[in-house]
Amino acid sequence: MLPVTWTTVRLFLHVLAATVWVGGQLTLAGLVPGLRDLSDSAPRAVARSFNRIAWPAFAVLVVTGIWNVAAEAGKHHPSGWGLTLAFKIAVVALSGASAALHAQAKSRLMIALMGALSGLTALVALFLGVLLTG
Image (tube, rainbow, N blue to C red; front, side, top):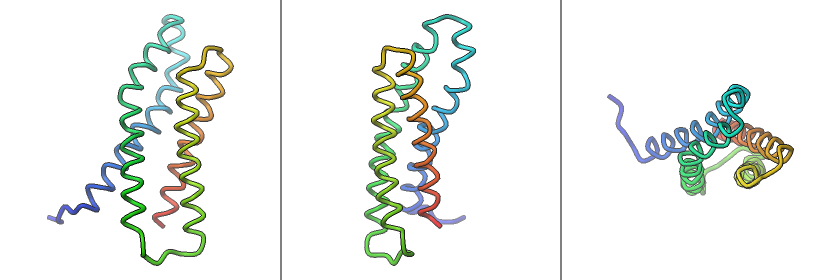
């Protein structure tokens, strides 16, 4: 059996948290139309329940992301790696900010716009994370 290292733990926690943050948003986006059929309050109730695991997952993403960057410090990276990392950090911040605005929004328009922006930026951050490993 292969040894378990701190690198393995760090990457596992980062991928697990990304699965919850990104996958949960995609799942909720697919469930909302059916939830509206149940009741007008069902989407908000389910979203509040999701937030109890989504925000801790986002925190784990930030902490393990910082850990990932620290682990990569001083290593040789291809040209453009630093710019890609900076872009990813900005996209992650936008994902968190738009998710927070989505959770606080009152109008259907802002709920939809901020939800879409949060989901889209979460997907872009996931893609950039994979790109950084290549």
